[in-house]
Image (cartoon, rainbow, N blue to C red; front, side):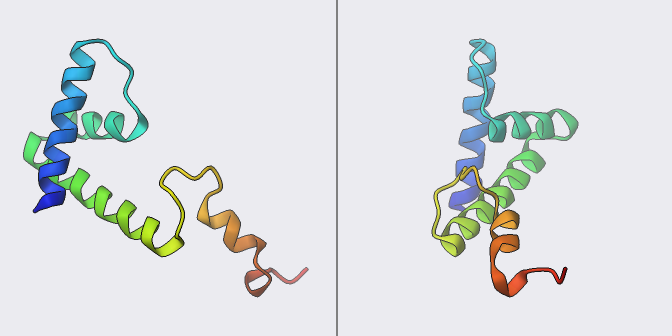
Length: 85
């Protein structure tokens, strides 16, 4: 429920930022694009789902959100996951 309320707040803040002609970050831009394709409630649920996945990834990897090195490249650097040459 808290993620849904947070998603609604993000959508509202994105709408206000867009009206004030301020730039949007990638997450807010994605949420606004989803809202343009569907209704507000579905966009809020989709954003809440994305926020839950981000929270899980942050807790799993012990790294802050928006780390420039994606998880896939870290996997490839590990010796346990190295491909046979």
